[in-house]
Image (cartoon, rainbow, N blue to C red; front, side, top):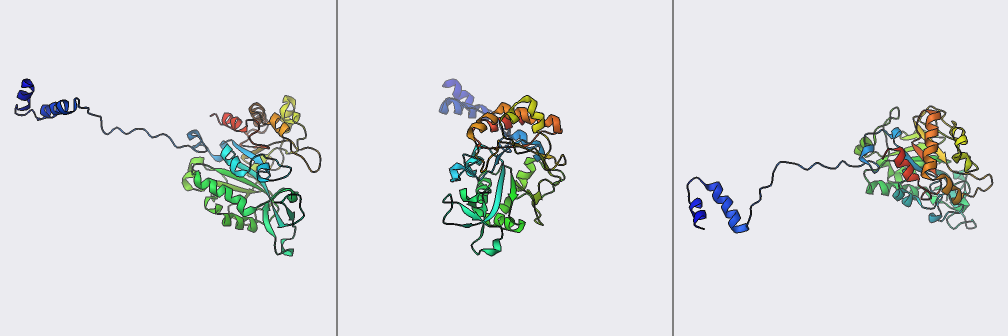
Length: 332
């Protein structure tokens, strides 16, 4: 200790004295570099930071056909296994649903079913519902169904969603349900001539794009899908081979509604049995929902139509690997 004491008392050696105290009291003294900020990990957009800079029409989304018609939600003749909240959890980001007027009826085929009503003014108890053709097999109040998306977007601020409404109700009535559900705060209100990037939509908070199939009325954020914005394929495939056989892929990609005008591209990818009522088949979905089948058909459609489909709509999400197909097509 004699040597240390001499150093400690030598004039001008204050730094050495401080360093010596560190060693004596603590056994060591570590000096950490300062002013070097750790690089922040990029935030994701729809699950990946690689998608943030891509415009909406350049991102492949998995969609669900007749999204509301799910066995989990109590629907008969369902097109989906999981209800909309679970579809969202599993990665679906585009939703094809039907809206109808209906009224509760005591003698229907399902406890949650309703009688469809063509003239809502004729019945005082008419409401708007999510249901498909035979609403007796199951129905969900429209406001309640839209609230699923509101709740999801509130809890997941980095996600963008697309809704396509096969509309059998007036645009103003649909808009009223959107407002009542709280979804209007997230509705995209920008232009459609050139779609924004996912990142810019997320920054704005306007993260759900809403389309009508036949009538958008004068609602400014409600877009008529097949009038210059969206192209699509046919939707009436009766056999899995029509979506699987290499020689059938090109014909399965032929233009349907919208022609080739839209920069959004909906690839309808499910089997519709030639019977009434049609009974969707999980077994058929297991064949056509494989990653390889979806990727092969999407690439065939890209070759034929000059644009990669960016909405892949399937039955029975969770059967097969539709989510994996979207990731592969997105290059993730």
